[in-house]
Length: 507
Ligand code: NAD
Ligand code: UDX
Image (cartoon, rainbow, N blue to C red; front, side, top):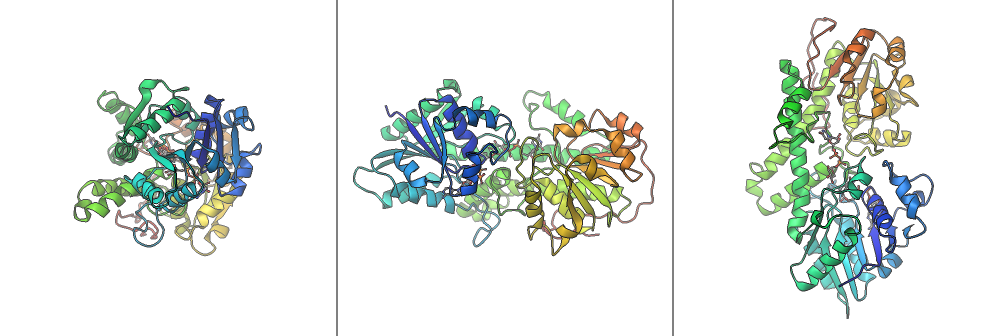
């Protein structure tokens, strides 16, 4: 039986940081070192202000940092000392060359494999935690085999991470399952058991699933594809609801009570996957990224069947996501009397979901883009996303042109400031605090008619109250018919599914 006493995790991001902090917290006798090439990120992990926001993370880190949890830029030493190395680096969508915008960029994984073999002698377990295309473990192994040394014995495992941001600590402490894939050889199985023993410190044995390497790698991609399809399905129903007078929340409750379907992941919203903003894509973007991997795999093997087969389904999911965002932007413009040019619009929420400061692939970026393209002045507020991040995201060449951001975007210090003098407020992230705002105070300071566009259904239950105050409410997946101010419809901007995502909407 191999005993893991020292763990090195390469990659101190949204996965590596929380995952290894929880391992250190749950396994006081294991020494865990999280390493990264990004010095400022490591400095932040060693400071009172952690580089990422996750509920409960700070407490976990502070309980073991400096005892059995360390953050360092000394990658080589940490690899050398470790019995087990997690690879938790980013695996973004390629932004260049073959497979651009579709395939996974595995250069960071390869760099890790090379660094691990350089710094290893004897026995070590190397574990993929990053989300990778199926058979990535084979590529890692080939790099190891081509650089072999006497007595070197590197076992490769797959242990994909299923945490979702915003609930990472909860997910890690109480996972639905832990998946470990390894070689079916005795050596491979020995490594699998060693990693199982780490998780058995706190995860019940029946939740630890062991499979062969390829099933483990593919299960991660398949799980994400299923989740993406589910949101995509409910989002498509939301469009029907808006057209027919049905309410998507009521429909979701009704279908979710069918035990074959279940009630989770049925919340219609402005979604988050698209091929456009691919530079920094990893997690938040994980759905899209992982769909890309899936597409990549299929396109390499069976190019012809790709569009009509699994790949086609993936692309429809992505199209649906894009359509949902464009539809929502279009609804804002339509409701604001067909023009937002020079109008002040408050954007509440910039993170891709609540309880995280992560903005990668956030729908707020796309909604902001569509409104900026129409010349709207945006006043953006998010409780956790730093001002600089919003500016960086909106300044991406795929999002805005020339001086659009400096001309059209203001970052507000609180939601009231953002809404002061605005024609409309648009909720893009479901932060709980948006349910608690003083809407009378907000309404007084807004131009009339004052519009609320709820892209996250956070204000459900407050509609009567808000309408009594005088707001016009437009919400995803529901046709709001009462108290709507009549106007003469002009030409409504139409967004076609075929439009490339960075193309200006047709007006
Ligand atoms: P991230 O960008 O937050 O962090 C990755 C870190 O790896 C960065 O800090 C980067 O500097 C570092 N890095 C890259 N190459 C390196 C190298 N050669 N040596 C040392 N450090 C290096 O990414 P993330 O969100 O933590 O995602 C990591 C992986 O986990 C991805 O494959 C992602 O798809 C997967 N994943 C993410 C989530 C999530 O919710 N974030 C959930 C499940 C799986
Ligand atoms: C996802 C997967 O859930 C996780 O297993 C994987 O490891 C990484 O990718 P994450 O992207 O962090 O996690 O968040 P998730 O909760 O899955 O939400 C993704 C997006 O879908 C968010 O923008 C969220 O607001 C949205 N969403 C989620 C909905 O619109 N409706 C829902 O019912 C659920």
